[in-house]
Image 1 (cartoon, rainbow, N blue to C red):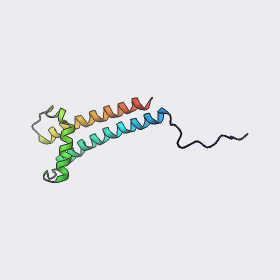
Image 2 (cartoon, rainbow, N blue to C red):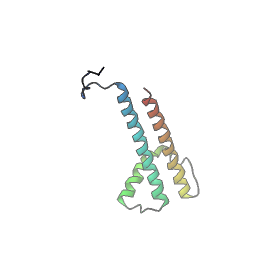
Image 3 (cartoon, rainbow, N blue to C red):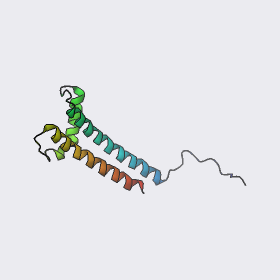
Image 4 (cartoon, helix red, strand yellow):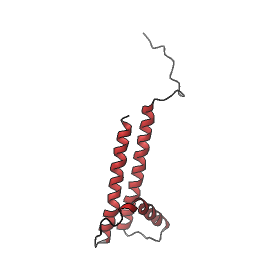
Length: 108
């Protein structure tokens, strides 16, 4: 016996599961980009990038905005360790919250 059903309509209504997956992917991507800026700033700072460069200034401004709530949680004598901890903690938190939220949304 052969299947005589017509081909699915590409414009048909998509179930909410597809929407939930897209929302989860969006949340996960935003968290990854935020953590990426923070990690990029840590690398640029540790490698001694020229802070007068426009790109470095932009990355520093975005990372400073993203990690503004966590600034000076750790006050170390070593500048590189302070940057690593004060920008690394928000990166880890953004990844954990973003991926955790995406997993919850994706289960719908």
